[in-house]
Image (tube, rainbow, N blue to C red):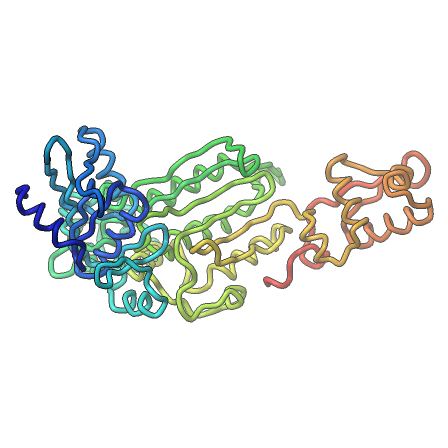
Length: 462
């Protein structure tokens, strides 16, 4: 762009398709989102509305970092032109409207006149409904980007599950994808690349899973990523989760049984749900798993689809598929049984292991599943109707490992009879176990795992 043309644009001021920004702050990315969701446009970076041309860093490193930030935050690949004026550099960032809605930090923006505004819920709903599902949108992908081994694995799993009897391992991968409608008008879809691609993050940098091991909210023990196509992400996520949780063994009649902190089937199902149902239009965020000492939090961008409530997740319900191509692949591969049943099975698996039912939440612009290993949390104990003193006593035993009548008297300043009565209540409630008969040998410890009918499982979710 010539300097004379730039000066004319500056003199004309901001319009529906032109914006000036001094630096790449949040307002800059909001404007790019607005242009992408409207008619497209150009943001001139390094121009102040009042002071005129102020310039930006002219180094190659700045330009590279700047471009990567746009890709990372918006999954847009803009045309960026450098314009050098009187020793100062201006960047002309041109946005062409893509085939999908673009969000910044989970919010969608639009251009109205020369202003950038957040979309109303009504407009956002209309925009999303007007678009095809993310996984069915086509792109300029090369067939060479498809990983033949992943397609072969998928076909083998589908044949073993008896869900694709008409496919053969001898068929070429691209023919398999054609037959299953992962091509439209001869072009590969987003779903095809994310499911079967060699390196989907080349196009969708945040469409992956981050798994962290936490001691506290601020103490991170380990931090890992599961990348690649969705089949590889699923396998790698399970592998990392097993590294972050404990396992013990039971040997009966010469057979060894692995008993994990949490039922692996439930964790697998939650990971599959995150991969299948996340909002892939939200390009700025990734699926996230945090593993703590006493619980696991699994969350993915995008809340529940319209028409599904949290209450319905605890019983059989219809499935409203946000990503039908992705869901179809995992179903055909035998990795999910039927649409809409996964949340119910997770509840059943946790109860069978003597653990609280998983907790489902819509929060922070996404959907979360909480798995609790520790039954003896204040929240669970309070759900049983225990008094504050009884809860404190249980938490005392949890910390110290045991308690006696005398220790109970001293800790809570009660008589021996009151201590005996309240300890007996905790035994009858299957919270504590009594050891020894009388005297110094008598003490109490926590009951270990409990069945559903022992009162600590959260039946409100079941």
